[in-house]
Length: 341
Image (cartoon, rainbow, N blue to C red; front, side, top):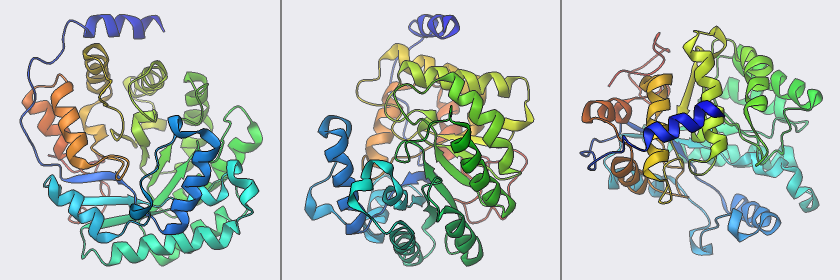
């Protein structure tokens, strides 16, 4: 914690003086499309957490399809988009009173995403999703690893109410990660599961779950946070940074996306501290993402360029990073994981 405080104090004197020039992203690595069924599940979740903790679009924008994602990409001259299914919602214990047929509804939503991706003529790549604690999770991984219309697996530990201090839950999640790793599926994981999440939980994830991914790349959503640059985000990134700095093989294939990280409330000191941690971890590990439609590529790009104290060269590096699955010319993961700028 002392290291984080010193980093923030140092960073406060090194804030960006002017916005960075526009550089088109090669890909938005964190987007969502949804059927009306997911919209209704999200509405039910918002009723649990309250409006302050949950964003819900107007009902006329309930369903999102291919055209919506491509329009958002084109608006900011982004090349490709990675669509992460929200099918994990149906297994959420917070929605147990909805009595969902979790296996059927998870498959149906993942099929919806697969259909939308197929309509994009190569602009979109899709990831299926599961609640890793649901009984049907393993079957869903097996199905899509054979089907291959979707390129990877998304899990959302907040929705699944994951407690990484519960050995039984850790065991179940590790089994799902191993199943995906054995099938060479990349994974996107929303790691932080509660406001009490911290470095101890991150250490458990790195030690007990991450090794089971084998050689698969694991992208940590929202750079291990979930909205903004708070104390917990810095603690979690510090934990990853410590492992990466000593060349820990467990973190060799870990990436981070920046969706939802830089917000309107991010202070210059926080932005500079984030930039310093990104440099320490390695800029090649960071991917641009918008969390569409909670935000857009254009809005995210504007915030990042206005707030992060990067040189133009550094910004171009981050903006042009591209994960193997997001750029069609990359057929297998390169040693550096991402396609170079």
